[in-house]
Image 1 (cartoon, rainbow, N blue to C red):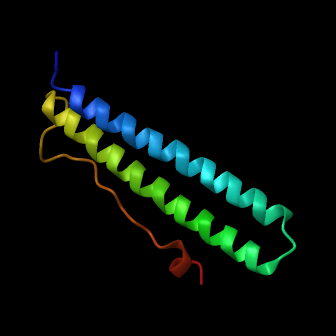
Image 2 (cartoon, helix red, strand yellow; image 1 turned 120 degrees about the vertical axis):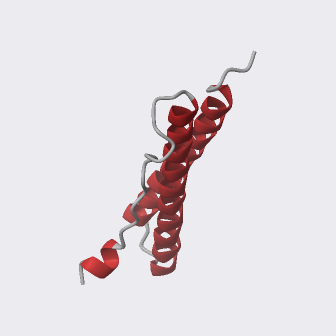
Length: 95
C-alpha cells in the first residue's frame, strides 16, 4: 500500500545510498593522496575527491528537497515555506 510519504521515502533512501557511495569514494581518494609519491596520481585522486564531494552535495540537496516535499504533502509545511538551499563558493570568499 502506498502512503503519501512512501514515494518520498523511497527516493530519499536512494539519495542516502548515493551519499554513502560518494563518501566512500572521497575516503578512497584521500587514502591515495596520502600514500602516493606520484604527482599525477595525487592530482587524479584529488580530482576524484572533488567530484565525489560534489556528488555528496547534490544528493544532500535532493534529499532536503524531497524531505520538504514530503513535509508539504503531509501538511507539516506550508507549500510557500520550502527549505532553501544556499550555495556558497568558499574558494572565492577565501582569496
